[in-house]
Length: 262
Image (cartoon, rainbow, N blue to C red; front, side, top):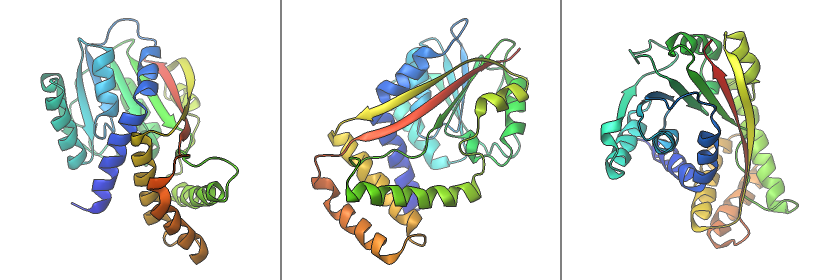
């Protein structure tokens, strides 16, 4: 198992911890007609959406689908710790490949996962066919990576340059980042039931500090070959001093689209 896998697992766990209230607000907003009994979580990661949905819908069972065995191992471990192992099934699958039998869910949740697919439009049509009649499909996407440093400082300018380099790289490899998923959902045959953007603006906490440090470490690995030497040196100095900063926060946005199977 690589350090990258460890880092990604840590990021997902910290994301769940830091943004728990915002994720709960999204699940509370979902326009469900009746409480879903079977939910599929596509790109489940370590369970951020899975456990929020289990809390929101206490009678439901979740099938958590991810391509990473390590993420699913951690998700199953957390399910045991939380006493909900009997309500969770993990399935390792590549959504760009052959889909396993996932039954007929009442709700499908896909958070920050569809933009990774080579052909998300095809996946949307498959979800439409998978859902129970009148079932709901919730798509959640991020408005870029979180920002942690206060605006207007030299460090925040460096942060923006780092993000610009990462975004440029991701645009080449993930062209569906930033897509209008509402338009795509309608084109795939869904009826759009609602759209909401949740703004995140959190002050420093121990979890925020760990989230920032882990995120900047991942950014450092991603931009090593993309930034000039002076920016890399400045980023290393920032990383060294980051644990001692008391001005960190989390600023980002998440948009959720709710679409119904006609």
